[in-house]
Amino acid sequence: MSEYVIEMCHITKEFPGIIANDDITLQLKKGEIHALLGENGAGKSTLMSVLFGLYQPEKGVIKKEGREVKIKDPNDANELGIGMVHQHFKLVHNFTVLQNIILGVETTRGGFLKMDEARKKVMDLSRQYGLRVDPDALIEDITVGMQQRVEILKMLYRDNEILIFDEPTAVLTPQEITELMKIMKGLAAEGKSILFITHKLNEIKEVADRCTVLRKGRYVGTVEVAQVSKEEMSEMMVGRKVSLRVEKAEAHPGEQVLEVEGLTVVNREHGKKVVDNVSFQVRRGEIVCVAGIDGNGQTELVQALTGLIKTDGGTVKLKGADITYSSIRHRNTHGMGHIPEDRHKHGLVLDYPLSYNLVLQSYFEPEYCRGGFLKYDKINQYADKLIQTYDIRSGQGGRTIARSMSGGNQQKAIVAREIDRDPDLLIAVQPTRGLDVGAIEYIHRQIVAERDQNKGVLLISLELDEVMNLSDRILVIFEGQIVADLDPKTVTVQELGLYMAGSKREEGK
Ligand SMILES: Nc1ncnc2c1ncn2[C@@H]1O[C@H](COP(=O)(O)OP(=O)(O)OP(=O)(O)O)[C@@H](O)[C@H]1O
Image 1: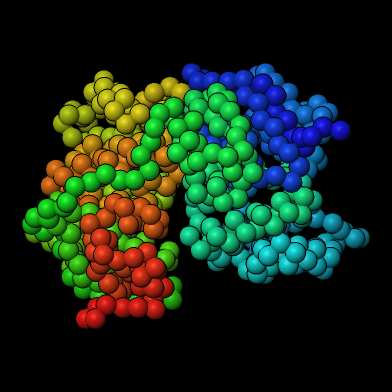
Image 2: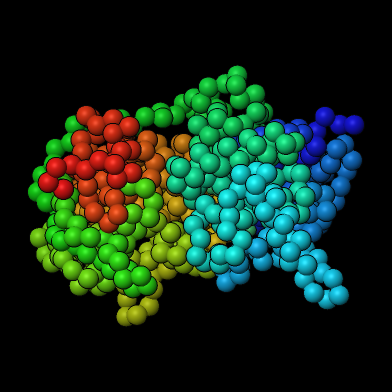
């Protein structure tokens, strides 16, 4: 009997213009948590999709417990006990939790669903692994964290023994991440074998036993996590030393670039104020961060500032001019840049090529358009420049369809487009979500450079490390209100946590 529950041997998978996996070998031991680390576009999701039967490799074999197997589709994968939680969940939104879990493997008696048995099995699994879910809630009404637990239960319900998690923490809040780490350890302790894709070295250190590193589609090596440092792992992956700290000089704030006065947004469904009489300013030459636990109004605040939703009170001024009721395009062409929270919904047109996506805010300008006709050569030239400068990796350059790009490279494309327009005010929501450490270092430098060129930056981040390292001033948002205006040099992470949890509030706020 083999030491390995799964072996992927010499896997090669090509896409037009790119070898996504070039002779990669990955060996998974029973009961281990095995991290898969690599730069954006290194081929991690592709390799996992091969294992789950979504792609057929051109070369290589897969072995289960030493025996060669063929995985033609996800049904084959399932038969072999392999389950996957995708980066973007695959749930039916108007079905309940229970219906989603049993979908496709329903057991029936006399033509009727045996719901009671299914419910019992789900609730037993939920208790056994600490996966809290409400079986009767609709998917559209539950948090992202609970949706993920539903995906995990789906795998367990199908008795999967080999669990693939593709960047599971990218969509979670810090609290949910802690919970997931605990769940993963519990699963491994019960003998499940886990493949875990993440860019966060802290998470690898916390839960993984071994880690396989990929770079540009190739296998670099497999290490015992306890025996290497975070720095060593990032060097293996990027091929050079990476600074995990942000280097920046003292800020020199100048005149106000954004003034928000009494801004209020009421939620149309429950009638509550989600942004409640918020006032603050961002000046040129400073990075102001809005910190808060997800769901405290930061999403709506940004949507109101960028014109994606209507406000119910208050004013917003950009460079002294009232833009409260201005169109999105007006804001964009008058100095506002926006890296949105949801890159698929508000950041890209997924079925357009990369080059079109890079001029979404400027294609109508004389530079790229004459008499209603697009100047394709100019657009392509500009796209090539951004692809080079920001190291956006994709198979066919500007012609690549955005949907086929790796998640991290989609994010890099948005960041490139927004920063390159050199806005007076850059609103950056989770700008480094899903990015590898090398790319994070680069984006952080770019944001600091914007600040040093006398631009204002409003950063919204759920990552406390990013908040503490990057910002010059921290505004804490709690239940739609700004409850503190803090100096990152004097506040501690613990104190920040108290403000974020609503246990503390600055006087006069
Ligand atoms: N369906 C596809 N069609 C064409 N090219 C693809 C497709 N899927 C992936 N690629 C390309 O293969 C390469 C590897 O992508 P993959 O998604 O596996 O990377 P990744 O390591 O998971 O990256 P990230 O960390 O950014 O999610 C990328 O250059 C991507 O553009």
